[in-house]
Length: 111
Length: 117
Image (tube, rainbow over the protein chains, first blue to last red):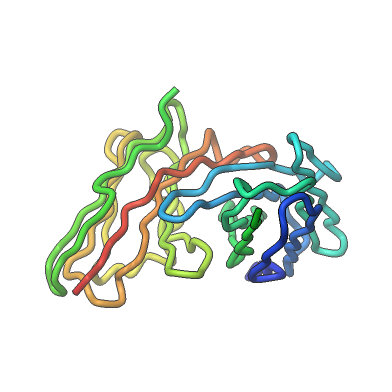
């Protein structure tokens, strides 16, 4: 059974810092890895999707990388802003077709 | 283009009462998921539909939970009777086709927040 772990569980940083969120998974036979953002009281918003054949994806100040062999992905946020405050979740999808989620990293960016 | 629509957004019920949640996925999306998310946890899959067929419901507590997807479009998730431990957010999501092995972006609704008292 796929297990997804996200470290750290919580992070508080001053505005302007570059930061890295980590996601690890136990079964490297995945097809996709997707990063989501969840604001309080809201659903999940897709940020980036990395296919198994890709190494990274970029969108604006966000960059996600994937290393299948080591079972790891990182989400890099450049020049963080208070509006980036949210919970970030990663989900991996493998042969079972079931996207499996981590517990998320709760990020606070303070002015 | 409209996103995934869920209703109701919030529901408070007494234990042993029934409750139902409705989901309208993005038009043209074949795959529909129901997830449950407890506070501080990641979402956990309850059931996945490919068109109108439930292809993975192993995590659905079938003694009290039921789901259907009429004509492969809208879906309803029902709990009867509700228990205190069912308090959670019930998230509906859709994607074009989960059997496509790559690039299957998943889109979520805002969720239905259930409190059982």
